[in-house]
Image (tube, rainbow, N blue to C red; front, top):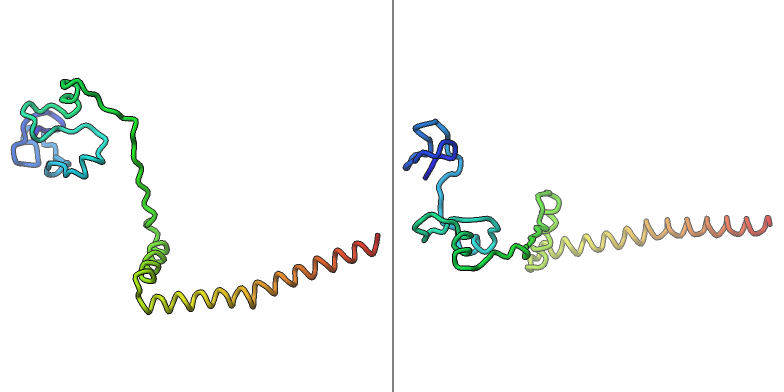
Length: 141
């Protein structure tokens, strides 16, 4: 491996003996098949004797890269602790965890009770106030 700063050969050490640069790449390894499929950069092929990149090999063979196809992966798991907790709870309910299913049932009953005993009466009161105001405005015209 070569030093990224001065280009001298590093050998097996991670620190260049010539300029003192600390190699931050770590150990170089060959990409797995999955990593090769999802990697969009230029790589050096492990079976290449001259150290040429895969892009140069393709050009020599008369082929070119097609950069028009891009894949985007979205992780809906997120790093938010609330999101992870909700998704973990949903997985437990779906996978048949009895305690999680009981807790989900209690949550649904509580939301229904909240809607029935709190939100619905508030909506009816607002609706009644609106009807009274509408009736009073019509009587004074």
